[in-house]
Image (cartoon, rainbow, N blue to C red; front, side, top):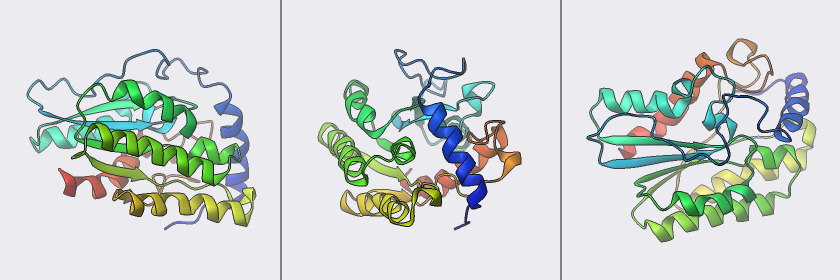
Length: 228
């Protein structure tokens, strides 16, 4: 796994922490009261994949949502005629606590594969890892209770080393621990190959460009494809 340069990460922390406090800053963001729409217009899809996350999933700052990694994965699925519909339920600024409350109304629609991408905003706010872990575990438990046969995928995240060695390690450990306990497929680090690379990030140095989103899609796809 690639290491992220410390100078970048310090900048990353400041910018993203500030940005999290104003999740409606960009008109391309997903409105908080909007119902997430399928990223595919295919009518013959019989199974749903729910992408549940924050601005990384929502595709904040992109020209349109079609450039976000859930839609790129939909394009691969369609090209293989696999019969799944990807639903982008990303919301900028979302924390694990917010997600724990928001997941309930999303469970009104059938879910066959659930991809959880939350926790980064918790880490940048210094929220206790035990709290983040418990919130994420509750989200997963709610999904499993509603759809016992649903396949589960967890996108791992990291915090900057400037948060301190102890916190860095405790936060990093949330994801493999949760994946093991809840029998989830783990994507070790969603931003692997993108974080810290300026040409793959927007001007805010935080959110991936369209090119960067392709790498995120690759990172997820290599773990998702075996579940389809």
